[in-house]
Length: 100
Image (cartoon, rainbow, N blue to C red):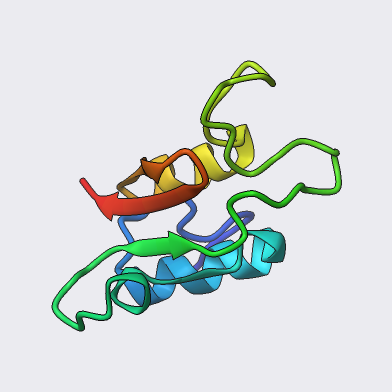
């Protein structure tokens, strides 16, 4: 197969592939397996260790109170949606993601 432009940007991704993509496109998010957060290897999901950090556009990755007009940074939201995942707050300072 020959691919042109952005390869497989709207392809459902597994946990490891999505973590790699997120950390490549927005390393500030510090995406890791949710099993690290829960200390349970059976949990499939993503924990954003940097969910309270800011991207280069000076907007936070996760804004629980929507002070910036969103809860999940639009760039991250798009990456998750395109990969078949969704973001979900664990609490006001912790963002997780799970497969649809």
